[in-house]
Image (tube, rainbow, N blue to C red; front, side):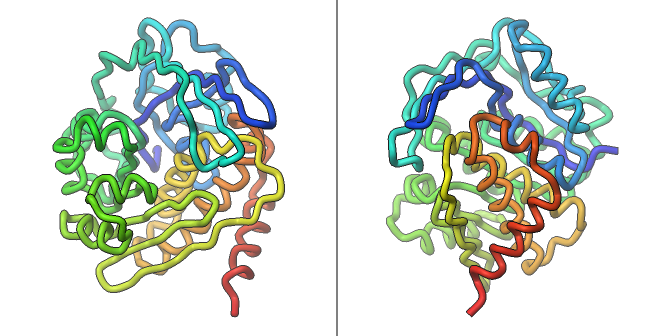
Amino acid sequence: MDDVLIIGTVALDTIETPFGKVEKGIGGSATYASYAASFFSKPAVISVIGHDFPKEYIELLEKRGINLDGLKVHDKTFHWDGYYEYDMNEAKTRKTELNSLANFKADVPENYKEIKYIFLANIDPEQQLETIKQIKNPKFIVLDTMNFWISSKKKSLLDVIKKVDVLLLNDGEARQLFGTISLVKAANEALCLGPKAVIIKKGEHGALLFTKNKHFNAPGYPLENIKDPTGCGDCFGGAFIGYLAKTNDLSESNFRKAIIYGSVIASHNAEDFGLNRLKSLTMNDIEKRYKEFQAIREF
């Protein structure tokens, strides 16, 4: 049986960085998250693509054991065209073509409804809510979002936050959502809405975990070679919930380990375009870098 249900986007990305360019490569929040989760668990995806989505991309996901029963095909695939300058923490959008995503409605297949671990990857919060409604008895729900939904559908987003166990967002989004420069204050306000934990991603500078009585500061990994950070946040979230599903341990101490595994996968993802680095990534690579993260925090 599948361990983790992931709803999000499956996309074609055109990306340019100072280190190269890719035209309509595989992308999307559900794509990166499911691939990252697959190192630890068996993911199942809910999303939509178009008839133009290359067959080899489907085969790439299926070879990782990712269940695509919830992947609909309609019209053209969601396409994002963006670029990065030397500040690789900020993506700039040239063009967004919603295509089939514009009228997408979450529809959870029967064989997904018993899955206990749910990752609501970046997508319309109304579809995130609809997904929760269709799951029979979820054990653990993680929510990711972005500035666009905070601006355009804040009420729906707040409704989703009230129903999840972990809220995942970056530092800019945390400040925007709660109208404060203080990440501690933003996290405390989020915890008051219902989640058991809040994780604030800080790009190359690591991540912060806040629970009711504790907080944890995960380091960033000092990468020498960065080619494309697209999807790193999605990889972080997918690996985080994938590891928790594998261990079935929802203690605060295990959250910390899951955050480090999320950081490990995300750091590898940044080393090449699209899924190129993750395609050759091994568990030995992952465990080696996990130990490096442990050493970074020893004093």
